[in-house]
Length: 339
Ligand SMILES: *Cc1c(COP(=O)(O)O)cnc(C)c1O
Image (cartoon, rainbow, N blue to C red; front, side):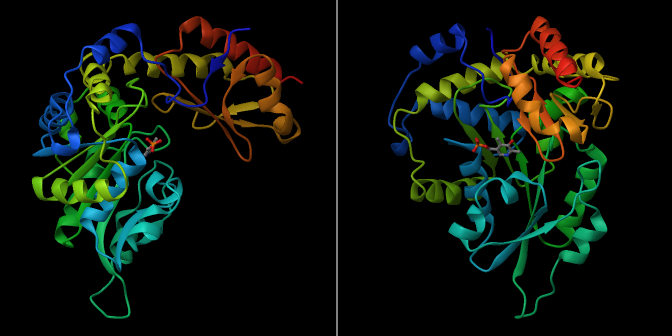
């Protein structure tokens, strides 16, 4: 049975051209800043993002963490969405390793955090309080594109309040492609941005933090401390360079296939598509309570894998998924909803 793996856009395997690019990468010791392939990745992505410098990290979790550590001191605070990856899905690293207090805020239905709630959460300079230092957003979040207007307004708020402004842009290229804009139209609005190469772009490993030189030098020290100083990392960086040069526009296919899946399962017995459309490359389903418990298993038994359970299920499209796989997945999902 062929497995159709919709658990995440991280499950892609490097294609043969990407592997060839890795095998022919020029290498050096990147802890001595001597790996030309890592430098090429960092410089080219920083330039594309409109920032001074870049830092290649083994994961998006580390790239976000070193950014938070570079912006904030012990006893500082960052404002963040309640469902944001840096707050909810990174094992509390900012608090545990940085002594940075998170101030999480509920999201609106569109994934934004209301500006008046952000304003209200910024603490006065008073020794009872942690020092509010940074605002961190995520785009896309839950596959949702955050509007350019909102990002600009949030950036202005951060500037006026003297806060740093960080973007977890793990899937920022999905937002770029969905809006048919350039990367820097989003990334220039921020002081620092973490960009994943290992999600929809299809590289096996890695994220790049882009920012100004001071933040990147500070982040480089933290990366070393966290064990993220990698030696002949150009092998991995070359996969990232390949992905950035070749795979970005393919994200549009993922978005189209996600919408195709929505069209095929809409109106099925026992299921509803949350929000009625795909969120870029993601589809969220609610399933009637009677079916919910056995739903994942019924689909997995037919080779269709995805995640979720409590209130909704998440299906993620990526570059290893073809149209005929979506047809098959939709059929399995519709039938599971009938049981
Ligand atoms: C995947 C992801 C990250 C980083 O995850 P790693 O698995 O550590 O690379 C960060 N933010 C968001 C929104 C993500 O989806």
